[in-house]
Length: 162
Length: 439
Image 1 (cartoon, rainbow over the protein chains, first blue to last red):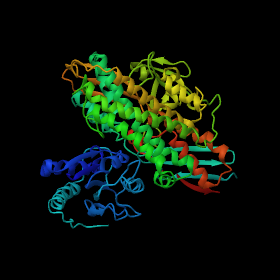
Image 2: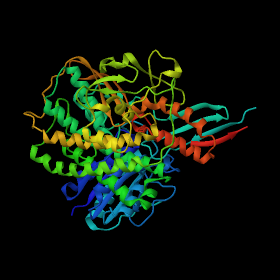
Image 3: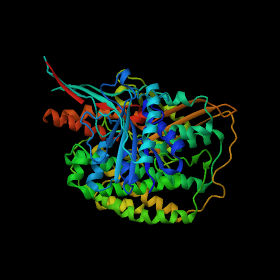
Image 4: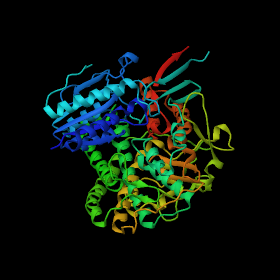
């Protein structure tokens, strides 16, 4: 079964668009070797999307409290099945059901994939607009390499983690 | 000196978007209510200027991750109004089917994930799922069928791409719809069970009597429960078409919010708010619900008129049932259109449309030049229209629940806001409560 890569985020909300932006790049690099889904905010749909999958990679923007300009574009990697999202959750996008809640619901209702990797890139501008902050664009390029390597070799990528 | 208390919520959970709430009150009543919405407004209206008219449905669909179909529907109808074209009835029916899918998705998300935990005393759907896994599972099953409709007709589950001005890029065959029909039959049974379950939730008593009774506003169509078409009517006798919307309704800026408050023009300040959404649709269009929906409403003893917003969750569950019934009807009568869309030519014109998003009236207005470039756009989302009514509800609610401790009162206020399923992503951004005491 092909890996499934899901982006969360809205292209018209500045840094929130880094997820779909990264997804676009990955589609160019990985082509038909993976499946791709762009989710612009209905995170409750994730349970259906990922439940029968072997490997799912989820890409989201996050807002970390300490995100000042020098920390913009940090990449966080989490094992979604075995690591809890931190209480001061860096993966805390603005969705009615948080990703952490979607994972918890998936655990309770047995609707999780075999493997779930969450990558998140820190941003600080989530207002309406198309402009993604430059450090996030650079981070997206780096993340494409990390995910491509991980999917191609099965190895865990090495990233800065919270 | 009177002791004032302040409720502040810096982050309101279980709503789509971000915002904050500020309430100042004392023993004598509520002095001030501010539902604060933070985002800079009107980005999308500015963004649309200079874009091609064919892009409007896809661009506006990205305003909201929960109700993209609503934005697509209002956009295509407004542009078709400008172009003076009317797609074939088969297209009309397919659009209605697509809207059924979104109503199901959006309403079920709100019922099971966002609102039901309030009534059962849980702070999240996850906490509720620990005690009611089968109930939450049922909600997800129902929602999945709504997703399937959107996926089949819209071409993609999350952000539909098959909608275009004049129709669809591709219309499904009848045989492609048949597997969906089987799912809809199962879903309809689940939706009936859902209504019966929701009806048993404990509802706070809340009523706004005259002269502060709600003014309900919704579309009305002579032949069907409203979705894409109809006149704008109200519980006080308004009856206008979409083109007249801006003659009767205005948006005004309030200092505490970036979202504009919608009001009825020509009214006094304390009497210019109105209510859109499921309760308004239900109250103004009960007779056009399907026989099955009315039968189930009668079974649970639900009246034809509902003015307790805490019971809007029941109305949503009935609309979910209606959407299943209507989707099955559409599939049973489906004729594939001869062409999936009407060809269009740009012309300098202005068009207007109002459709019924899950949360209520969604108004779009576009002007374009003879090259089809959009020169002006106006979008009024349902949450903007309900914002003043939500604030008024809090003014009337708090005096009745002053006996509660502060945490419970704050929770009650948040629940009262969630009665409207506010979508701050549409209105702009949403909410947070702090409670401060001030001598």
